[in-house]
Every structure is written in structure tokens, then in C-alpha cells.
Amino acid sequence: MPALHPNAQRVVDAAAAHGVDIQVIEYPEATRTAEDAATAIGCAVDQIVKSMIFAAGDEIVLALTSGGQLVDPDALAEALGVVKCGRADADAVRKATGYPIGGVPPFGHQTSLRSVVDPHLLDFDTVWAGGGTPRHVFGIHPDDLVRLSGAYPADFTRT
View 1: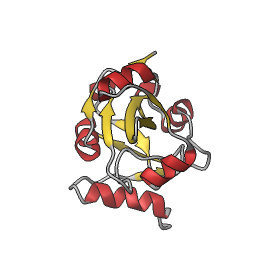
View 2: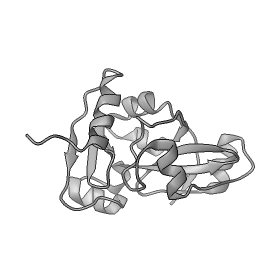
View 3: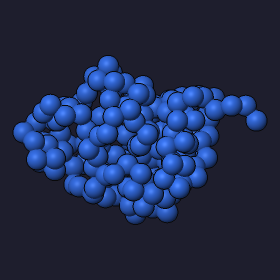
């Protein structure tokens, strides 16, 4: 079996450090969008975890969003107790997480990020998240997702 991409291996190692065994799957085509990932995996779009990085004041934060939902920046700001939130640029994302946009996992980042999770993700037995690159994904139980990411449920999405 070929070695995992170093980014994917970091995600596996981060999960293992918390007692969770994940299997990262590599797809030949990128799974950059929730729709692409759901099609490749064969699951519902809502089971896809979008790990979205936002600038919230002077802080970089992680919003774990169900694939069928959009982040409402005003609702996210309210959930975080800040005045304004906006998408972080690619450089800020890589600096905070150590991963590229399109492959950001929900945990295993270079820095500790305050995180919120879309409660809709908690309705499934398995959700699928980015595994460190746009071609790597893994399945995880939502309880483990919340525990490993340190996220707390908050209403910050819209359809």
C-alpha cells in the first residue's frame, strides 16, 4: 500500500492521538466542493463537512458546515460574539491550519482554532471531511468530529 500524502498522514496521526482510528481515502479527482465529494463518496451532500476558515475580528476561526448549507457571516459573528466575520484568505488559511483551501481537515491544525459546528452534521451516523488535500477524505462519527475539533454547536448557516 502506498504511503499517504504527508498532509493526510498528519490528519490520521491527529485523530490517533485522541484514540480515533480514521481511514483516509484518496480520490483521483479533486473533491474540492461538497457536491464533488458527495458524488465521489456516494453519500448525501449534507454528510460532507466543509471546514471553512473565517477571520473573526483579530482571530482566525473554524466553521464546520454541512455540505448543503451556507455560512451566514452575520450569524457566525453573533455565535462567536464578535462584530464581523469574513472568509480568511488562502495565506491566512494555510498559516493557521497548515493546509490548503479545499483540503482543510476539521482538526490537526498548526494552531489552536476556536471552532463551531453546524448542528445539522450531528444528525448523521457518519460524516465525511477533508483529509489534508483536495483529494483526501475520511469518514468520522459526528461525536468524534466534535471532540477532536473542539467545536461547539451553533446556528450560523442558511440553505
